[in-house]
Length: 185
Image (cartoon, rainbow, N blue to C red; front, side, top):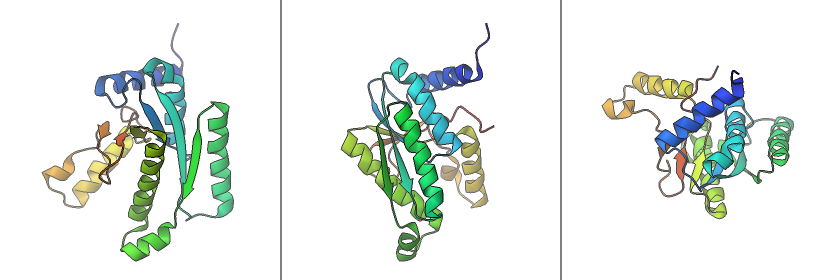
């Protein structure tokens, strides 16, 4: 009997997580859930694997306040419904990314990332979660390395994303990327 598409994906992620220690048995994991395909797939995979991996799974959504409220409401509603369906605790947060970018002289992308990661770290700490999982894939990995090359990085900048790393903003939970074994296709 051949395995279904989802079973093959789950098996691949399970082996990757186990072999790289991206997630560890008994951990509380907060999934950064955007409502997009990568983070939604991550949440569903971790839900299906939580027993096998011994994980407690929760999710959090961050509104950057850059898009129309009706789009955000639809996206947030999708995330909330997904979490309710699978009995996953769910939190939301928001930040004024445009104002933060202006006041700190940052790009919108960088300001959004900082505020989102601050929110995720605060939520993780309040939950007692030791790790935040995000939906970065092998495709994101290649894009990151290419971007660093184009920016003229030295050899240190060519280091790719790791399956598990220290929190990018300093102190906080660790950051896990369980989908680095998958391509976005």
